[in-house]
Length: 246
Length: 246
DNA sequence: CGGCCCGTTGACATGAATCAACGCACGTGG
DNA sequence: CCACGTGCGTTGATTCATGTCAACGGGCCG
Image 1 (tube, each protein chain N blue to C red):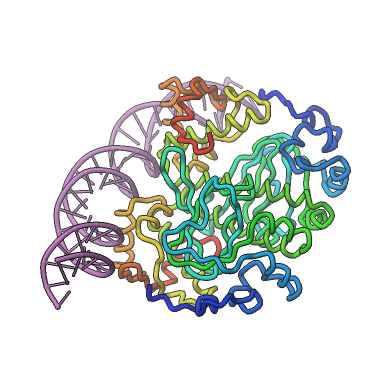
Image 2 (cartoon, rainbow over the protein chains, first blue to last red; image 1 turned 90 degrees about the vertical axis):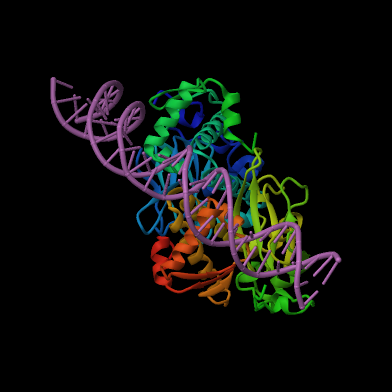
């Protein structure tokens, strides 16, 4: 709530061009020159606003698109027939979501805003067209899809092999690094999701999450107040996380 | 071991063209016409043989490629700094592996043969070139990457939310469906991996896996003899699996 | 001010890991 | 052909981590 907006795109309601967007170094335009960027801009809708708790997309609906997050945060989750849900990821500014539509041309998971969120939308049709004209957009998209796969693999490792404390440490360490990459503070930040969601993502009960947080606080590794987290001993956090990716 | 080879590519040592390969309807050539297929064929190495326990690729080595499995089976796994490993998937004929190299241009997980295995190799360089010439190969690759993402998401759901019996049922039901798609028997097949690997994949101890198998046998849902599995009550198996994807 | 949601904590139950032993299948060499 | 060793899988006994149930408190919003 008291998050200081760094992204220029959050500071005003004018729509920022890719060129001037502070996120372009993470986002799709990453490898593009200014001519190419122009073509890209014509293909995307940069004005999409999603209010907290609204959906960016839902599973099985016809329209499918790729979204770049300009500000705010998004959770993606998969629902099973039996009614259980698995949160697949929490996505921040600069992240790209929607690759789950690559398989069947429509989304198989759903995306919901955790905060008021601004996104750029690139419909699958436009994406297809774009790929024909701009080889570099294809490369960049591959790169971004690769990032998603990396993330999912790490999540599988976390869920499959780690104990609760390691899982939480992995998550926090990771989030800290992601914040750093965005020029947010790596040692102090707000979680944008409720405990329920984080517990689900980490494959544990809310109570277990709460206890584990309290424990890590007792050990002076972190300090927690509601959704505010301070990392007091990042070295210990890292070693707990058994992080494979430094 | 006593697996009856169905793929034509396994029956002889002659190298089969994509056009005549029985797997082409799963594989990259899926959406290509015969001219396009020809271009594809020139870009791939169709002669690669991997003996049981050998590596198809390993994490962080420089060369990176995409591989289509013609026969045999492959496990992919991620190793963490702390030495623990998570098996990410078991891949059968027609499956494509290696997308983990999309992010950084080199593989981040490793792939090892569970059986003697034949693969087609498409180097990342050739893949890049191919995308320039053949738009449909890009589409097809997107589709295949999407499949991998689907799989990983389902794995996260399984590991994060399900109990041991549900996890095992999900795996068996899934494998049964994959066999069916390949014109193998959906009700009777050999597991190609040792218990250790399957337990790791499912995020449980070997002993737990063994007990759960015994239990499902006692309930007449399956019958197990060593690595041979017969599905006796696929309806019950499906309902146990809580499968989201029928 | 009051109600409600969110998060925490405690007590207890339980599912799964661990430790240990065993048996069987298979390959190897005598 | 048989004896042996080894790796793989199963089963039992026990421990332990985490889930479940229940109560409580505090912040936030109407």
